[in-house]
Length: 145
Image (tube, rainbow, N blue to C red):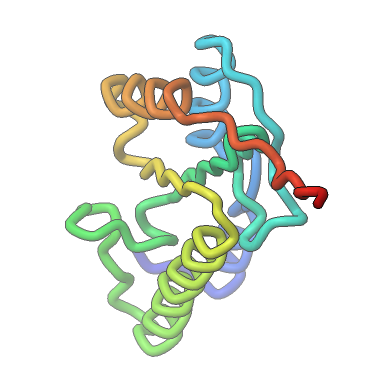
């Protein structure tokens, strides 16, 4: 598909970073399962899409293209302007890795749901089960002598 620069600009401008269709599907599913959460934890590295503060668990809903889901056909790279896209997509993957490491070092559990997995209710059921079975993590208590 050959787009003019103006068409490409409009397409890219329409790409959302939050409240995407896949994210909304996951949120509705988890809410219907009785799970309550916070959205877009701005105080956490990477501003996770869904945050369960009491369980110290976060969920990222990743688009297969933007986050380069390994082995997924939707993660194929554009054949035009390859230098730009390679740099951009490689940086996204590096940032994801860094954010996950940072969250895990702070004691958070990280779950990733890929856009292509959302069509599979089994994956969502597995996610809900993992969240429900995650232990509640209490704040560190201080010992008095």
